Length: 343
View 1: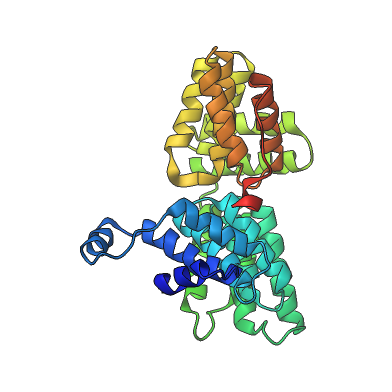
View 2: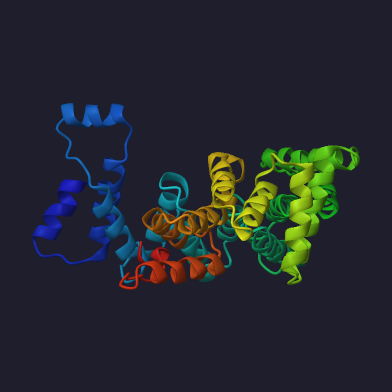
C-alpha cells in the first residue's frame, strides 16, 4: 500500500487522500510495539515517522480530500485519545464529528465519555449525555434507538457520580433498568454506579462519606461564584480526608496563599504522583508552577506553566492564566493557536 501511494505522489498526484494513507502508515509503523518493529526490520518493511504521520493526518482532517476527511478526523481522535493520551487534542476532533454528523449518536457518546473521564468536565459530559437521551426518548431520529438512550443514561450517571451528585446519579441508574440486548456493559456500568452511590448512602457517618460531602459542597459553592466559601469547604474536606487528591490540592493552594512554597510544592507533587484523578493534573501543575516561581525557580516554573498551557484538559481559564504567567516570565515567548486545532 505504501509503495503504491508513494509512487502516485512521485508521479505528480497531489490528492489529500494520498496523504491520508501515507500518514496512517507513518504514524502506526513508528508506534508499533518493539517486537513488530524487529519483525519489520527483518522483513525489510520501511519504517515510519510518527511526527510526519500526525502532520499528514491533521492536514486531511482539516478538510479538502475527496474521500477521507471524516475518517481522518476519527483517526485523529483515536490517536490522541488512546495512543498519545492527549485529550485536549482529541476532544476537538470528536466535537467536529458530532457537529458534522448529529444523526450518528456514536460520536456524541464518545464525546460524553471523553469529557467525563479523563478530562473531568463532568457538567459538559452530563449535558452531552442529556442531549442524546432527549433525542432517543422523543424518537426524533431513527438512529437513536432505545439502546442509545440506555448508553446515554449510563454516561449521565457516571458524569453525575464524578461530579459528586450522588442522589441524581443513583436515580439515573434506576431508570436504566436491567440493561438492553446486545449491550451487556450498560447494565454492568449502571450497577457499578448504583453500588457506589448506595455504599455512600449507607455510611453517612464514615470518614470518606463526610469528606466527599464537603468536596461536593465546595464544588457547588464554586459553581455559584463563591470561591472563598469553596476553598473553606475544601480545607475542611482535607482535615477529614487528607489522602483525597482534590482536598490535598485545596490545602496546597492555602499553603501557597500563605507563602509556604515548599509545602505547596510538596502537596502539588503528591497530587501529580497519584494517577487516580488525572483531571486534577493541570490544577496541580499550576500550583506547582506558582510555588516554584515563588521559591525563585523561574525556569522550572516556566516549564510547568507551559505544561498547563498545552494540556489544560479543556479548561480555558487555566490555560489563560498559564499564558499570562508565561508571558510574564518570558516576554518574548510565542504562544501559537491551541494545539488541538493544529495537530
